[in-house]
Length: 116
Image (cartoon, rainbow, N blue to C red; front, side, top):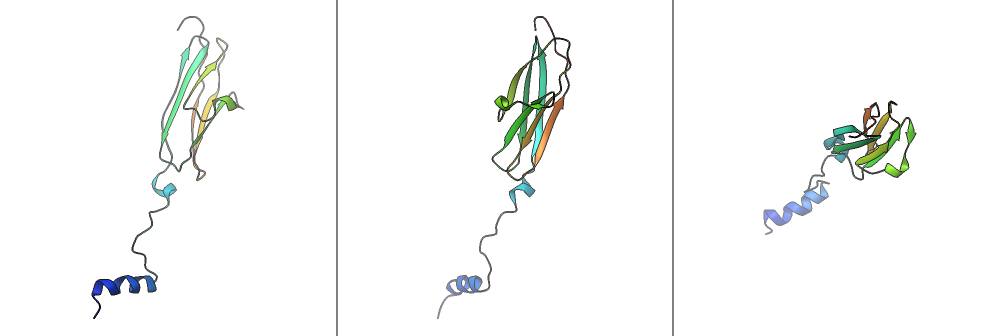
């Protein structure tokens, strides 16, 4: 006579039951969230940084200055952006994940002149 344990596995498989439950979709449990962002005005330069949590790997970061994409800053969590004193700049960082979710950091600082 077979034991209950040796009969349970073939019966479960025949019934289409899984012994291991699949985890919920990663995008449903790990929503992409912007956790920080700033642009510090220095002399003729902005030092900008963004951070995020969650999301489905891989994450991609794209930086935009005055509406133009700056590919040299792609996939960096920070950027040093040169500027002309007294001008206002429109700076955005868009972080997106493999599932298509995205978050955005946006600021419009004024460029400073002189020493930091």
